[in-house]
Image 1 (tube, helix red, strand yellow):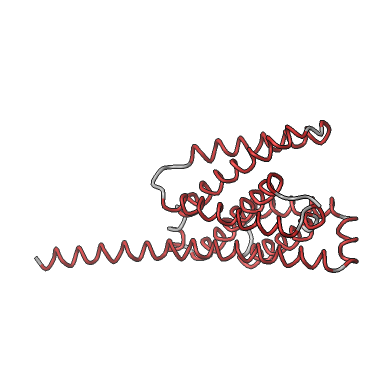
Image 2 (cartoon, helix red, strand yellow):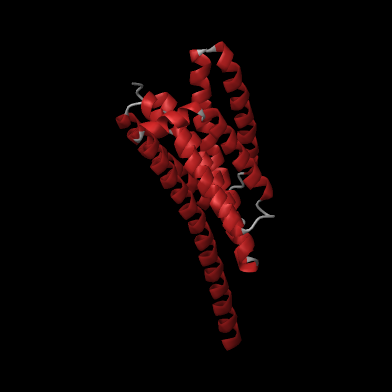
Length: 235
């Protein structure tokens, strides 16, 4: 009888420890993501507050955008090979650069509408990420479908540079919101399932937490931009 009780208590303790490790892993991802968003906001505000910086950013904005793409692709592809500190620094540098390039929205939209859309995005992101965290349904097929939708959005956006179609612009914005809502749920579930690594290799877990933060950061930022296109009040 005592053996059965000991076994039950042992199994219960193992489940609790696993759940705690999972929560700690996800909390680390969210902490880095929020840190990246705060860094982005700080650099965006700094850019619009200092005229000299605004002018420089405007003149080299395409170089900054290319640098951002390069950082994202390099970090995603090479994170397993780099040190944890290097991955962390690259994520922070990317967040800062994104703040510089996103500062342009303050000249295109009113501050009130930016604040309102940010709150809407935060609520939408939070609800969607929570769904991805608690659902028992496998979202892999959803993620694959949303990734194809993302490719379609990129192609349509490039085509619309020449077409300048307001209807296509609206359609891309609506689909963009839906795509990044789906990707948020999928990314949350995907990285939640990786928490076991923390029990085996803390260094690998630290790297995955940065990669998870980058993915969720990109989901949030892109969701925010597409919602802003739909609901933002232009100056």
